[in-house]
Length: 113
Length: 112
Image (cartoon, rainbow over all chains, first blue to last red; front, side, top):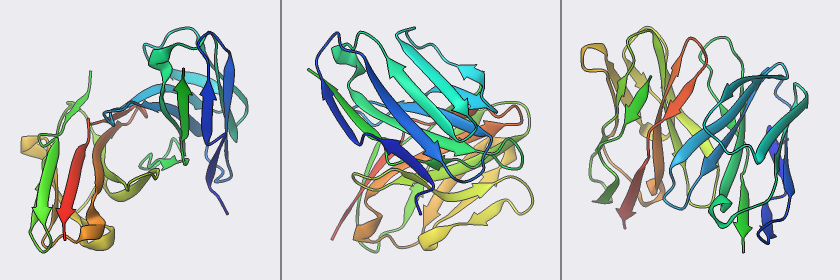
């Protein structure tokens, strides 16, 4: 059973379009994250939600809007896509107690043309 | 603000060589420390973690790491690498506030 799942796995779209990536976890965790990994493999946190509330919002263009309908889901909507948005986006989850070990999803490779 | 520094960006080793990847962090409070591994084309997965107790922690696949508080370091080691260890390795720090910071990663290439 997949612990953290993301859809779609690949997303190819044109500049200016709006797209969404979905994430679901079945681990019972209360905290979920979105990370962006660029072509150099650098991993940067974008957002973090705890019990559906935003707790971390790094410097990210406001074209990116996360939405957490419940503790098990954290979706990422991107408006007016730009070439520089091309990257792999990883969702992750953890608990806010203990060691905060994170479990990552398989990633969504976004290509903006 | 906390930060994580991984000194080696790209390491190339032959099979059976010993490995040590450096990781230093900056944060004055209590931290949890992690090493994650990302095999080619895959997602990140936990290699090992430290949160308290014995500063020498053992992880999967023969990896270990040592937390040296005085040096703010958490270096990853393996006595004998294999070709299958070729991957990207990330050091990460979590504070009690739940904020995670990842290093820039080290690409390990093991030649058969």
